[in-house]
Image 1 (cartoon, rainbow, N blue to C red):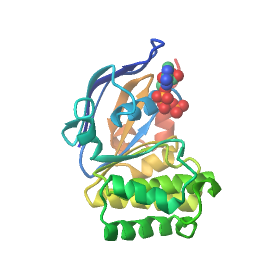
Image 2: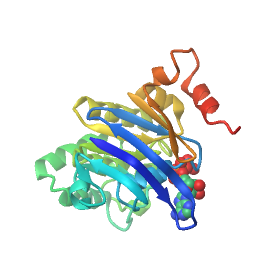
Image 3: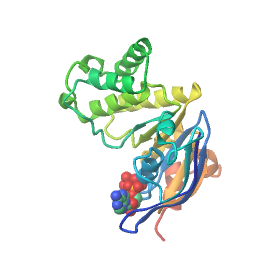
Length: 239
Ligand SMILES: Nc1ncnc2c1ncn2[C@@H]1O[C@H](COP(=O)(O)OP(=O)(O)OP(=O)(O)O)[C@@H](O)[C@H]1O
């Protein structure tokens, strides 16, 4: 479903933010992508989503190369960025309809899914208001609802729990799990290690641009009684 082969990113200031990262994610998996601040998570996600170019390597989404076939590759995923930047002079419902139009979601399917997600996130009654009247969390939930609307094969989220209240975070976790049970795939970055440990099939750990582990939470913990947080802190501590 998602393949990264020897992917690197060197920024203009010669900063090697991602270093030879290789990762394969299968259909139906939830993968949590964790790492300390500056480890390269957002850079990796921005390369997967085609927002920035790779310096080297290959990224394929459902067999489509994000560099060579960006339009085809982009039909296979939706993305929720870490900051809910959104054109906010329009109403919430207009934003969702725009997403529906872009992804050619049928009217009935669109109506059902808008109701399902915005009611679950308790923003349904605010959809007729302009987005500039929304709180940070409401914007985040609108973006998530929009990203779910096309029923993507791959759902990518950069730090989705930030700004969500516990009730909304629980709904999002349930939606992510449901998406995978229906055969979809979820790839998300997070600093909330408890969520990652409890929700994910596998955890990918990046440190200083390099992938240092990618396995089930149980295997990463080597069956010890330590928490994922304890193991993560040990693996990524500065010598
Ligand atoms: N546009 C840029 N130009 C130069 N360096 C950058 C740029 N964007 C990110 N970096 C650097 O690349 C490295 C990785 O940054 P990135 O944002 O990918 O980390 P992250 O793991 O998402 O961090 P955080 O957990 O703090 O969000 C950092 O050293 C950062 O300073």
